[in-house]
Length: 391
Image (cartoon, rainbow, N blue to C red):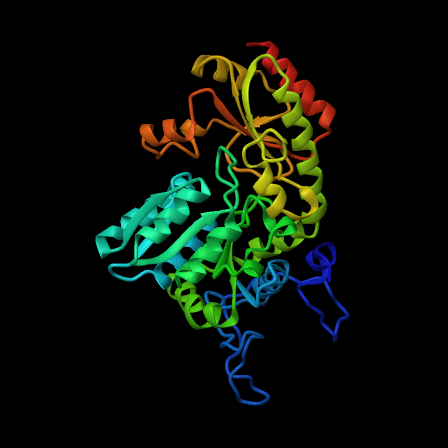
């Protein structure tokens, strides 16, 4: 099935007794165990006991089937947040004296959690965000167990050559996890290129409505069932069935939302690139962007996502005046939802970075990150024009 069909029908749910094909919310903590008709253990379609929703829930399973199909994996696990997914993955795969290599520009809490594990003997190395430094670091350390790379960095939207990083990791027998949140499975499937696991913050594009917190891990059956499933069970971090239902409802429009947001973002990036009060624009869809060549090679459909970052002339005072002048675009963290949101990275995504690292990455006090929503492009451009005129 194509991606547009998969997001709608990939859950495979059908109640033959009632003729219902829309997955319901199984808002229950418990299930009959054993089955009174057969006195046998009641199993989910994953082959594990279906007895308690902290471990397994039918609504959550419907979402997991869609996610696995979208990422072209065998199975998936849905978590209560993206960080819950990363936490379980760290605990499942990292041991004493193991080394994890992360991008310098990875999500701050992803780095913080890895560094916190140093008290248990885990070693952390920061690399990149360019491909060459990643590969150099992978070759430099023979004790590397895990590499975590993002398909697009936040907030400067660099696109590393994920395919090449995966290739090198596999040659070195190093497990590589790809956070595919910014690209989505609509344009890229890391598992096809040999990634060990794929991680998503479902909060962003996949649920797409800024109204639910969720995360997921997708991979091979043996990795999911024999390792990660038990860690989710022990941590109690399974996604709530009502939240799973909301993600299932949102995911049905993922393909058309992502396309619309990407096209609007490209128009906005072009507009900002020509504006006299904008110093620099970061968007891999622009031919002038340093990541354009790799992004065009990596991403299908020639869509580059709905996030645009840019620097305006002036410092913090100008930034706050600009943000205060916006009417349609809301000032808030997160991305990928129906509403357009603007974020000030030095007080949000990059807040936990050392000042020297921020400077190295170009995350300055005049940098803003815009997540383009589904509003009419004319209204967004007018909103930006009025706000820029105010400074």
